[in-house]
Image (cartoon, rainbow, N blue to C red; front, side, top):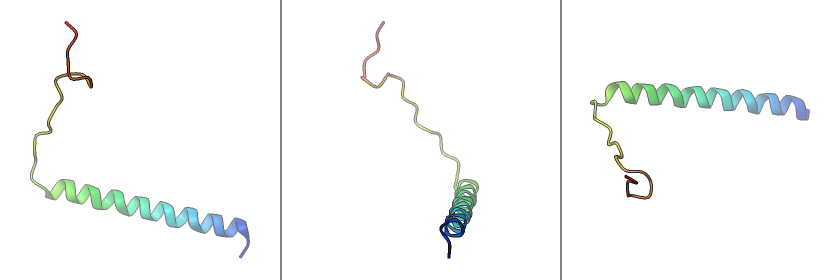
Length: 50
């Protein structure tokens, strides 16, 4: 198998795996109960500069 054909095949496999993961993630998000996300009120340093 030539290098070009192999790279195309691997690209297709990668695209199918990526799409499959996105589908699974979407199904899990739809089927799981909704939760509120925790939001950070302070900047990364932990202190606010007032």
